[in-house]
Image (cartoon, rainbow, N blue to C red; front, side, top):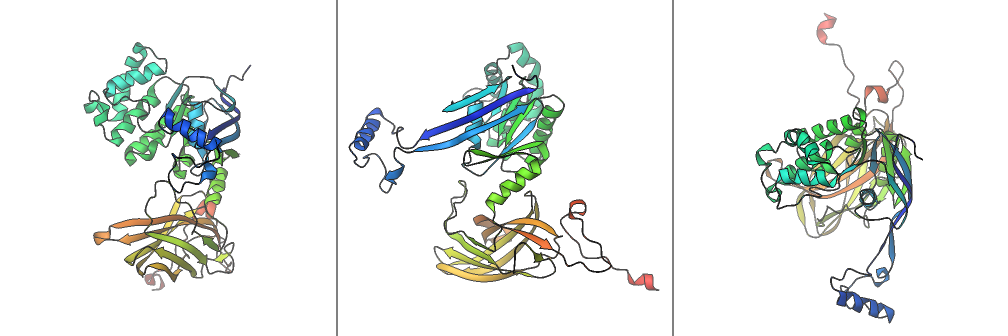
Length: 426
């Protein structure tokens, strides 16, 4: 028996993938690979330079994940690339099956794992709405009752009878989200659905998901790398790391833990072997290391300038290079930015030291990102490298007669003190 409010139960779920065993494209190729490994020979179908130690090994995408979700909960799932987020959602939506463990869903599931999942490109938008509804087990009459609302929300009414292969990515996600949000399902599963689309539509989607959970009693699972939307939408956070649940609880605490795994509380960070996100393909400029020249990153006096020593590796000589320091609060919200311009770098490693004034920050914990960019005309720029920086704490020497700063209630930015205007003295 289950509790009436229980909607999702995941118990000790594991998902194992076998690397290099199959998938050669043909049965003949797979048999060749198997026979070569059986004899201890090099696989004839692998690319030159492939690490042969990976052939035949296994990879645990999920390793003993357990949690429950109740009716009306909006749960955010966060973690670094490769942590197992998308694999978990694929298991929940029966795209693939777990290697071991149990998953129980108590209700119909509307899912959107990527743009246009479940849409047939040759069918029109209207036909795909009927298709998705049928997959969810809805009758034609039930879909007809929701059709006008779906079309209006999606903002693609003029193109609803056009094959979706002609839709832009923004139109695709608008219609796909509208279908998932409006059809009669008890569980909504969303994976980075707001990464495409304009800001106005993103806000409308967040409002709709918030309404689905709090007013309509739907259960929402939401995966995103945007911590602001996780914080705005969810009332609970699950953090995955290397296929395991390392945190399940308060949203702010979960986000702070996740960000602590991306940045370091140290005065020196080595990026020479740091793996960039999958979307980042450029490698002309790479930040090699950063050292913060302060006695302790756990107690940086806010009134004192901060010096940072950087090493950048360039594949060739490059002019007009900039370094952007992006300061964020402890849950990842952007707060402030300072840019260094007109660096001229030679081929190989270049070193320099930059000085920053962070006195506008109130006492408290912060993190940062470093962005290397090349400047163009009219303010245009190209991002060359982007890496998480360090965690640091700003402190303030208490001055007699001044208030002790309350960052939680007053904000993270401390403006200069006000002064009396001269006319008051007359």
